[in-house]
Image 1: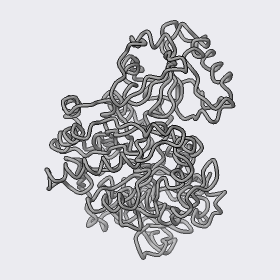
Image 2 (image 1 turned 60 degrees about the horizontal axis):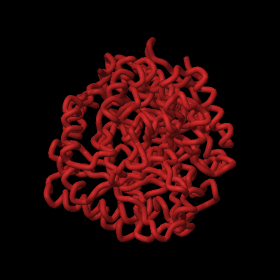
Image 3 (image 1 turned 30 degrees about the vertical axis):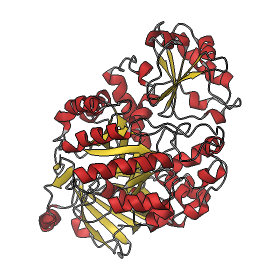
Image 4 (image 1 turned 45 degrees about the horizontal axis):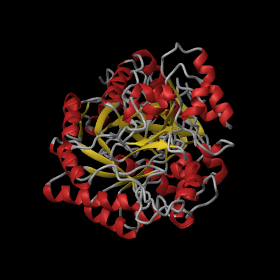
Length: 568
């Protein structure tokens, strides 16, 4: 539930309303501000408005701004906290509109294989965990790593994991689309040489045709359904740590794009315990489902979450996946490494139309993963059919997640249909070398064409796709302005300006979430979600911008990172 004193924000069928009225400003002045910030520049992100120098907060809202650093001194009372920061820059807190906070929270307790640089180190980390884990209990790894960062430049195999431990089931996750498990886990799941491959999935085999432990996309539930839910305290601790890490980089709201019902229960518990340092908008995961009937069951489980009134935590909608990730994104042309393969679609289009319709009929929104250009084309076909059958859907009900290889014609079609898109430049930065091997240089260079989307009039918002890409407000801005990756600049013609990149994490992100009247810019009446920087990021050289973090992040006017200097 909201903290005492927070203005009520109610989410009803995806629409946000608020009880806050700016007409009470005089009363608020008489009562004084809870917080006053004086800074070198307060960038409100209101078009045409010059930087302000003072900002007052009352309860959880911005109450007033002034171009004079002492223009709001009348708001100071005995209870006012004053930040005198003459060299600082204030910006809205940023949104990460496509990320996986729950994965990050799991990773707080999982084997930290992202630290390994060789397979020997990777396996030894698992071996060390096995020594302190009771026999028969699951061992999981962190997910934010790439095999090309290992000296051997490949994934481990089931046989190698067996040598780390044959007394525990082991789940090695890489991103959200790939697992590798040991023989113990294969046995528990009943996976044999004769197990049918689920539609839209892969059960990996080695050169001799034997199971190698790898599972992709719709094959993941074969094993992951067996994982025991972590205990409540452990999950809360993980969410506390992970949300704090996001906030430390300037992220104030995360749109978590693969939340199970059990995950959401953990988020509710974390919110109740005061453990969240970011606002969370959850997409309940339909990944692995293949029919409208299964989706209806999921929607039944979501019914109690429809009328949430908590500005910190709510359900945004339902997440579908239409194609694979790096290794299985559905493309129009075959892969560069295998001219017989063009990726995988995880849904039959007719079935996906029925499933999406089931969601929108119940008043929820939909975000669908479509990475390759074939997947983008098919998704637009699906969405167009849904819109024809439901012409009154509110704007922004149907969202494309990624749109990685969307070309000019596809982008124009999405704009005509009113389909927003979320882009993740950090994903491209971290995985460019992996994708180069699958898709070749031409396709890698045109991934996430932010310039084209904006020029064609799309509603675009930005994120990281952690654990595949590294989260961070300015790291994402740096990537979109430079198009730098681990293998150098890719597709410089798709770069956008600093101001445009910031907007994709603030004003445009709030529009995509339907919260533009509450967040995204700094004006009286909006939530006091702020970031404070010891310099103006707009004037930082690229090398500095990449790793720049705020000195402080405030959500609803309350600090969620260490208090800044100049506080009294």
